[in-house]
Amino acid sequence: MEEWLKKTPFINKQIYEVCRAFGYTYQEARRNEDVIREAIRQVIQLYYDIDGAVKLIKDVKEGRVKVIQRNLTSLSKFVFKEQFKFV
Image 1 (cartoon, rainbow, N blue to C red):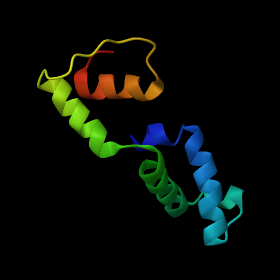
Image 2 (image 1 turned 120 degrees about the vertical axis):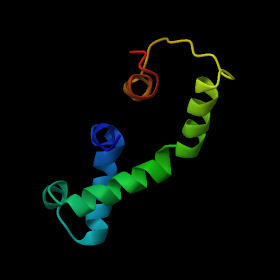
Image 3 (image 1 turned 180 degrees about the vertical axis):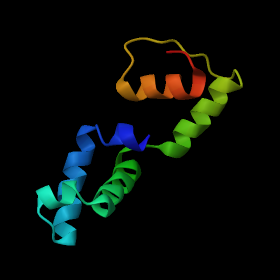
Image 4 (image 1 turned 45 degrees about the horizontal axis):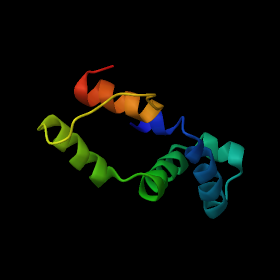
């Protein structure tokens, strides 16, 4: 998931925010793993509902929710491929 998050538009914005807080230039921050890890942590906290996603995945696996695939986003393709082996 970390590799997928590095490709989202949110990560660049968050790296910019973190680099300002840590005193790095944006170019320095893009090469600093600590800054990238912190940016990923913030992106997950700010933009994604991990607990809700885990509950939804569990409900799908247990048959309480039926999945209909249409116009999959890159995140949904990742989830289907990794969790359900659909794609």
